Image 1 (cartoon, rainbow, N blue to C red):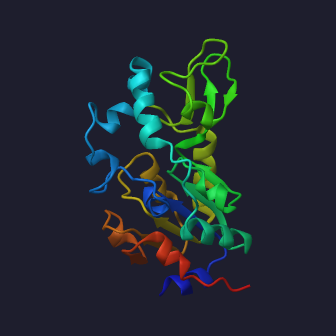
Image 2 (cartoon, rainbow, N blue to C red; image 1 turned 180 degrees about the horizontal axis):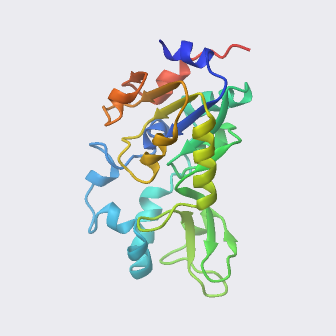
Length: 237
């Protein structure tokens, strides 16, 4: 079957996306040849983006974070826009994303489950006061609240657990959908990658530029850019 035929035959689609969904908006991923993991820093990105590093070397964390993680000029691409259309048409029930850029919401999606949080939310670790991302971007060194507390982005760092509500809602959506579209992810980051095992529906679709460990388990595999593939879908009212 083609992706168009699968979508036409589906009533409850859940989209599970990773970094490859946002690369077409100019946001670098981590593990591709030109991704952040293959660029040179004093520390590896995986070490910098850990809870331990954040607590011990906060200034260094923010140097990297401002330089590489805040892509505030990025705009939604064809994938984000088509998913918002599918939701509006009543075909898509939820977007589950490993991305932290807020582009799904910017495109108009309403039900977005952000497994790893968002750079658009920030809070004081001491008093809980909220801060804008521009407050982080325009500060120097470690950004602090007026109470003296350190401001932390609402993103899940390595060594930190995923939000329990987001996880339970994601599992509920995946268990109840008839089609799960996995896109732009290597399916190597856990616990997020393990969520696929909750799928009991009809069609399992994988769209990714490179092969993944899940290729042989899917009903349809497309090795291409996510935005280009989704842009070709026609929504029948």
